[in-house]
Length: 624
Image 1 (cartoon, rainbow, N blue to C red):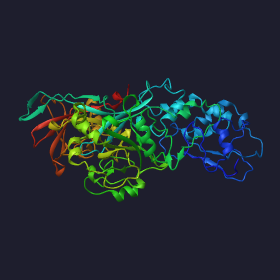
Image 2 (image 1 turned 60 degrees about the vertical axis):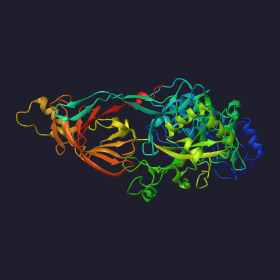
Image 3 (image 1 turned 90 degrees about the horizontal axis):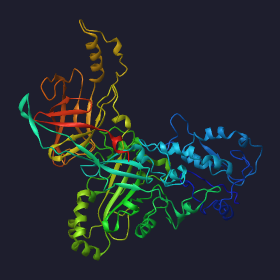
């Protein structure tokens, strides 16, 4: 074997695939590893060797989106190159398996996979299901896993969705598409092993209204929204498909994965193999050598791709977080704020580069916007590239003549906002203005290409607490614009450590009144912000819809005694309005009626109507 050590990192190594020939690995050793011949199982791990090479480090970055279980420190495994001779006795093999197993339970998935590639003894210990089940379970909230089906083990299941587990883990995603945006819920389906994402829809069959007893000129519309996932049209879907090479392997020995590359192109990508010849051909030509930069074709039902007769193509793209300095340089004072996502109004620890609002003005993503290794891959954002593809003139004639395709065009327009008929026959010569590093395909004409950037929210932002009971995801009534989703944010206050037990009792105050006043002092304090996660042509996604400067005495208006808001607290608020296209935006006088912790009402004083908002429980939609 060559004495030059091979650098094995989390960037060029995944789980359970045979090693491929590359520089630094001799043909003889490569063949023996691929065929399952193990490293001598004498317990010789993590010790010195008398060789001329350097130590190969299997190191997973702390920002890879697959952290160790809570309360456990991450470990780093250092493995010497294969050709070494022991310098002294090793006592690792003499340790009780339970102790080694306990140590392995502290490792991240990438480090655990690295340990399994060292010797036969550790392979048997590091591939047991009781180590991999918690790693999978940590990424599927709301579901208790009992089986890795359709995979043979939880290790195989984790490997099948490597780089994508952050999708069901964070559940909730909102995007920058046009002015309206989109809210999707991602979840894991234990019946099929799929990771799926669906748009969350809200429908309000508002048919009744009445006048407010306090003011006959004010109209109150009924609001009883019905929420559901758009199951018929997934935004994304990943099946736990594996390459034929992985399926045929019996894992009887040590296996190390290298991404197979021929002429700079992944020859057999394992990210999302397809049963469609078209997509297999497409993937082989568009997938880059670096799997972190590669685009993954998205799938519809039964594993068939979002292309061909549907005319609609979609690719999934990983994203790279902007550094604080880079985000500050890109940030602009006005909408769309330099195309960073989430926008400044939405609280976020990290932001990524977003696309322009209008697709024809969209510029390619720069190198710093796309990850090239696991450490650069964000688990807080991703992108989806969509386009309409015409294969040939015959396709155009069939499209013009077929009623079925005309119906499909209507669905495309409803889903994407793109009028395919207009684009086809008025702009057939359109091509992307600038060449892209990774063009989706060269098989046909691309029309209406756009990139949507999705981001998630820190769960603390939408999890209510005793001090911040209004935090959460809400759905609101926006009259002719329909229902829109909001983040109701209550920023933390500097005086949160205030001890209410030292609050003086007022003269003649009963125990019940004193206890209620302490609760009111806890809840009705500080600022409340309602931020649109989805928007409309007037006020877009990512903007304030109303703001309460102070829920406490400074903003208090009165307590309503009239129906239907009897006993509700009213505070001053500012409502955000604008003209079509988000022009001439301004804040107008309004009042927020705090009917309960799960239902709010906004009185738009100048408009003379009251609209309602209701809390949304996202966990209701992640269960299959």
